[in-house]
Image (cartoon, rainbow, N blue to C red; front, top):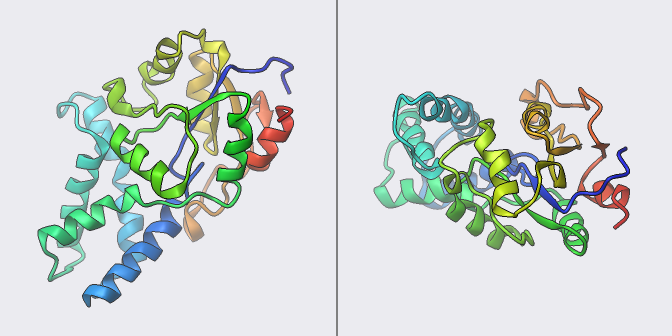
Length: 237
């Protein structure tokens, strides 16, 4: 572990801080029961998440203009509802389902770990989510961010360098004064290329039975922890 300490720690959010899959399955299962709508919600959610990177890549490659994640999610949802043959949904229903990403719950260690880290470091999400999504999610889940670094602040999605370096610029910090914390080795590799410090901890249940990678650290990151509480401990908080 590096003896150097960051000034700010930014966190990947989907999967790293919040349990998107478990949260959405519970949320939409309850919604379906309430509305009397039959659907294979876990399969829909897995397909929805699978559309996440391709939809952002179309923006990153210039195939469509800048579009915030909420709107990318909605476009993917509309296609999947038709593909899955889910009938009886109103526009209000579709809005509610799409805002499920605003209602995600943290992993058990997230709030206590972040609360500890907040006593010493500036903390915030560095996510492909937009500012409103991340702000309402934080309010729902009790995430104690100091600042919300949404992709719409930069007009770029990770792994574009403008995201990682944009945090340092907004905070008047050098890149090596910022630590990127994530449960995804690829995210950390791109942050490291931009000069950020790195911290890894695994989330082996992020994709449920479909998890294929990120069970352990694939490089010698500055810190390798078991979860956010352990990250705080290793940073002396």
